[in-house]
Amino acid sequence: MVFFIRVAANVRGGNRNIRLRFASHPTLREVASAAEVYFAAATLQPLPSFELDALVLFDEYAFAWVELYSAAQLSTDCQLYAFVKRERGPQMHDGPQQRPRMRQWRIVCGGGEVLPPPAATMACPAPLPACTSPVFAALDERDDRVPNCTGAGGTTDEMDTSRSRCSVFTTGPERTDRSDYLATSTPWCGDRLRSVFNILDAQEKGYLLFVDLKRAVDAQRSVFVNYSAKALLALADQDGDGRVSYKEWVSFAVSHPTVVDTLFDAVALVSRQDRQGKNCEHASQPNMTSVEVCRFSAEAYNRSRAILTHEEARLAADAVRLNALRDAWGKQKQKRTRSKR
Image (cartoon, one colour):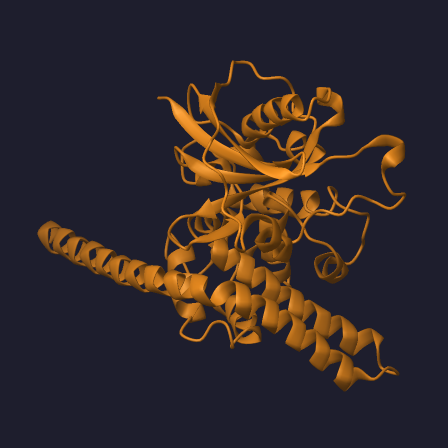
């Protein structure tokens, strides 16, 4: 099946939009590689000096830019925006290259500026050249093709959880404390998803319980007004055992990426407060904490209020449908039990 993806980027002082044509559903690495090839030609630079820093996806239902976790989020003719490392070599500053944070998405992609329509459609040959961006080149097949979470032949939940714990901190700066990592850096792609799961699972059980989700939701009560941890658990817990494995968490995040983004802000706030309570005993703790709380709450509220209104409606409908299915399954099970008797 032919698959189209629109990708825009700021090239030579203005936004350019291109429509990429793939022979089938592409992976994130294939999309990144094709975008690098086109935009390198548009900037008249050789390919090795042009690499992507991040890709974000426009959610047409929430009318907002959301983080791109997985190739499963891609739909034909969807709109992406590419953040580009334009400079490399001696012209770059000495410090590490900073990845764009979520508030920068509104500056570059949103506001009063409207992205132009695709200037042309470019057919992407197979195979594509290797992606030069370390963010996407480091993805393996499991990171790049998350959707088959419940298919046969997958790894066990314990292996998934173990793998997620060891990989989330090796791709970023070397850190030993998970709270420090979450509070001071912005994980990308699967890293954000894994870091939220790991911080929520503070006891390192390998799965999430209701109390883990409730702690994060309560930390951002001004945002989660009509949003309960119980409804979130009902949707994420696909097998109904009261536990959310990492495999179930990935499946839920692909369907509800904005919820994971908001939970990231919530657990970051909780981690900041815990870290300040332990390490800043002699500092002006009340003032410092209030500033952090206001900043995190304002960012989360401004970005997520409209989005979460839509998500709450989706979650409520999904919860009703899920309860109806469970009731139907229960009745069928009772009928089978009676027929056997």
